[in-house]
Length: 186
Image (cartoon, rainbow, N blue to C red; front, top):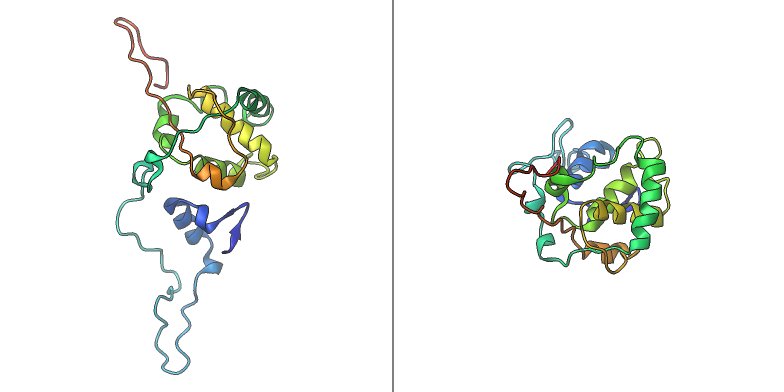
């Protein structure tokens, strides 16, 4: 398989794969005609053609099998290290609270931890994607889980295959007491 950054095509979600394929026109099969008949080759992409879709883009709920996976936990030391990295590197663009609450729950609940890892490694920090160590990315994920009230437990594994077998399980916020509003963002 062709490596893309620090991940492979097999590890990308359907939506990410569609974006990568759309943006990487140089990797598309050419529409060269068959040498003997002059007919276009089956499956060849015509110049300027967009990747076809059979419907709307998939949502987190549409992704196969993640909801049935065990929920990820993190070690308290991982989250503490992640908080230091987040404050030093991430907070300049993502202030405290911007990665929590309803928006995070909607985007990441029941998604694979490896999906979040892949996006962070390949796109963050915005000015130098991939510039953190693998351990720092894992620590930031642990901190993000902590910020979203996911309970601590066993450390997040460093193995990408193991991360692919864990989901992000964001708990539902507790109901607001009568006369009180829920925390902002929930």
